[in-house]
Amino acid sequence: MRKVPVICVLTIALISGSCQKGNRPETVAPVHTSPVPDLPTLTLSHGQLVFLDYDGNRISRARVAGKRIVGNSGVEFDIEFPSNERGSRTIDYVSSGSGGRGSLIGFDISSFDQFALKFTLVSINGAAGSNTGRELAVGALIGPTAAGRLSHFVPVTLGSSSGQITLISSTPVNVDKIFQIGFHAHMVDPEKWASSESKVTIRVEPVENATVRPWPHSVAPDKPPVAPDKPPVAPDKPRRKLSRPLIQFPF
Image 1 (cartoon, rainbow, N blue to C red):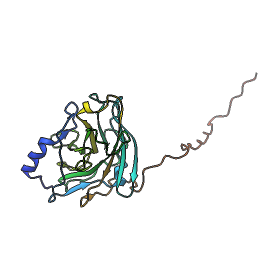
Image 2 (image 1 turned 60 degrees about the vertical axis):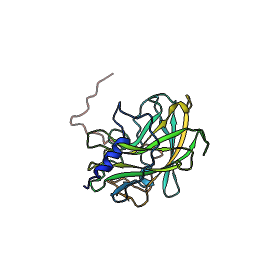
Image 3 (image 1 turned 30 degrees about the vertical axis):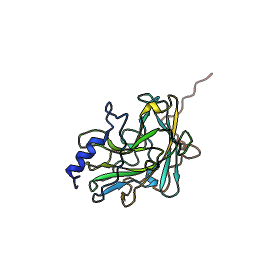
Image 4 (image 1 turned 180 degrees about the horizontal axis):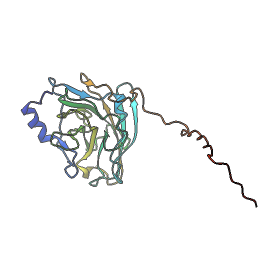
């Protein structure tokens, strides 16, 4: 697999986030990135993005309350942050080998040097384009890392200004197979956010001129699995024949 140039690695290392427990950034400086044109880039289609389903399942943490395919390109995610307190203002939403269905793990990504997604801030608490000063850091998340961490990401900062509404996050790839893939999001400058619940909608899309890998498993890419109307009923077991005659007792 081709390696990311040293200058690029050093630059990304200064701004990239770590998803290892206890080392998560809570604020980031505004970052605007795009895929390095000369590097092979992996992205996810809308049919794959809709299969993201795992957030760690921790109580009192941010969660994805809804998701829907928009057109033929992207997926919108409704994120609920319980508060602006530490532990409630950040989320990793992924397909993972640690939980959920794990529909996207197992991709052979040895031929790629970066993973990229396009993010758009749709609304904050139902209001689109309101200039409140609130910003959301997001990043294309992938793992594991060469250092043995579960995952990492390079953040970009979404906001209400024209240059921050839609941005691309590109994260280095340095392993051969995916164990975790998806996106990260957290509040920038939490004091500008409400101390009560905040609802944010973002749109996540594949990046143009990047590669979508074929599905690694036998999961149908056209639409998410649909639960059957009724649970399957186990067939009746055949009755075992008695090897001895039945003994009858008088009453």
